[in-house]
Length: 386
Image (cartoon, rainbow, N blue to C red):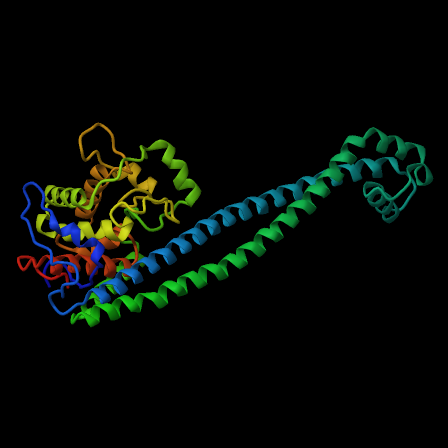
């Protein structure tokens, strides 16, 4: 199995123009005309279904990322409320204990049960002071109105904190159900990609075995680099806050032909010139070559949909203008090529793509699109991505 296990997929007519242009220093390939049959018997109708499935899974992943982000926020808020509640309970308990001690010292000749009854009633505002208290106790309570008010405020704060905590816990339980539904949506959708690959006359079992290995490695903690796209460890709000610390300036749209030139140049620069199809496939899967610049449900942005937190570490000034702009294809595409190269490309495209987005369906989709580009170009000098 050379250069990692590979799979096949196809794209629609709109992307065929991507293959019509070459790049400086890269060999030119010719794309079939719209409506032409692809090599290997894959029809363009099948390609549309393959790409549509990938888009649906990306949307589901985005919804799951939003749910995960919201869950982390709720967990943090719930933890803070629980801590506040504990502190308020301790403060109220300590205040009442000190005040009871002062009352008992002044209330001579009465049993402790009556003292506690009078004190509790007074603190709750249910006893008229002049009706039940002797002079010494009245003076203690009158002089300590600040403590009484503190006690009453503490009780109100406790009730409000308990109410908020119960509400957050109920919201979290509801969110857990939503997360399970989104995860199940992803799980149900993944086999559709495998079926599409099988219909192309390929062997998806090789791909599935490799993806299973990567998923097991992730569970074992083997992937320490943050994903470029997908969902990271930060909430959406935290990702968008980081946008203030990076360059995220919109740029004028560029044509597909220019995207192809940048893909080819970046792939050559980072050691996988012949596999520029994969880099272009990432661009197709992430933003449809700049049509959807984000932010995504996870907060990812730009033509290669980098998370701002990842861009902060791995962004690149690809065009040498002194700025690493997450929104500029001339910066984002070389950054993606560099990220993939560090992740294992071109020797192991599976690991490289899984690092980019920690999802098996994503690896299937990107390699399928890459194979589609290779077939449409009729490039027999590159081995199939399976």
